[in-house]
Image 1 (cartoon, rainbow, N blue to C red):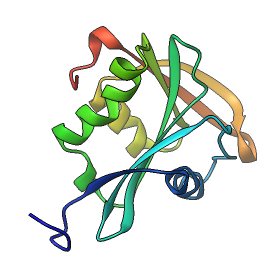
Image 2: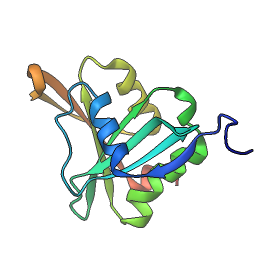
Image 3: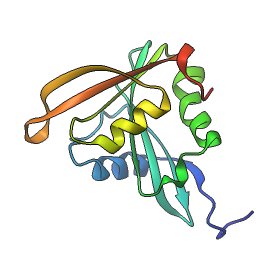
Image 4: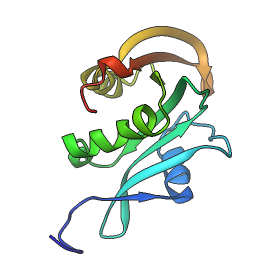
Length: 141
């Protein structure tokens, strides 16, 4: 398969961070140390993952996507390889708005465990739900 065939191809850039920030309604931005890995189709971003707030043991993971095509075993392996194998994190944290049931189902389907509820944690007073995934429980690596 080559260029123009509709295949999602990985890209690492600051543009991914900007795109993810713009595509998550409650996102107020990321730190200057954030890393973005995206998937593009014919030069257009279709999915992006931003890793931020790295502590050595934990890193926050934010995902935005325009298509479910990103969610393949190979792409999941790539997205979880970075925090767990390259950075050697013990865990990954994800947060989403309480009302975002689709993302909450996705987090749980990826193996994340519901860890907490945080009232007024997001812009507009939205409640956040936090999820965690530890390396030993990640079925994608």
